[in-house]
Image 1 (cartoon, rainbow over the protein chains, first blue to last red):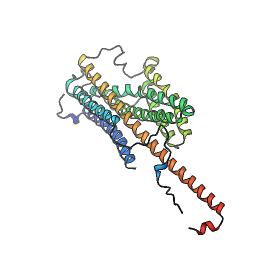
Image 2: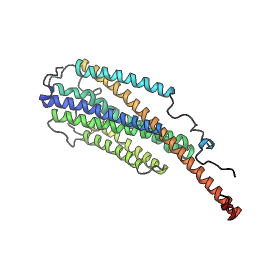
Image 3: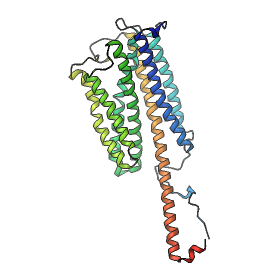
Image 4: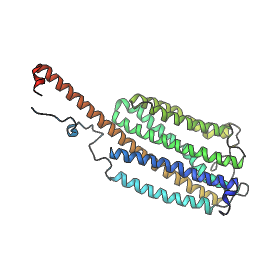
Length: 43
Length: 280
């Protein structure tokens, strides 16, 4: 796969958005659980 | 006069299922969790490499087809985690009167799997819409598969919101009953593309079309990777919920002991008469 000009087409942009969204949602949820875990540990 | 310190919790009774152990200490569970996380991240990296760099570009759709490698595994796991929630909810309903402490474990498992279901369904919806806009030219259509999948997401969001209304046992019971009904939507989502005419592509593994072998490898790596990650999330969230339950249990016991000491103290003073208050 070539990355040159990937954001210049809608297909390329949507591919990037989809992968970024996956990591944001999954990473965000894992971070939220981890944060609460640490809060309970301190409490 | 002997004074009693009500903040001292060393004399608190400890229920059998909530042993007085150090919260957060590194144990076997933490080690297994760390190893599972490391393995999941390795498989996720392999899946990403296969999806982006190894799998061939699809002839008709081009690179946007690579969304498929993340969309389909998330959608599949979003139909599997509800059954973990169902198992936890049924166990909770069965145990809540017979063994309330064991029921708390089942309840923690149910809430953990419901949250992970919502996370996976959210990703399935977002990636599906991004793919749909590029492939079909529309973000959304009220097609049977999409509508029933959205309904699944809404049912588990409703389940989690119901649980947040109150922390009493009644809310857990209400949530568990709702979870049983929510699980009914799962086979409806799965069979929707067979029961109704739909725009959604046919199933990857059991459908009519044959997937390119290289694409299949990339898909299977990502199916495994996101499954492992999801199991890690369920375990992490379950551990957090159990900690929250223990903290709540301890706070309740402290409050109960403080109330009992207060009753004891006032009762003692009433027996001694008004001069007992002057002693302080």
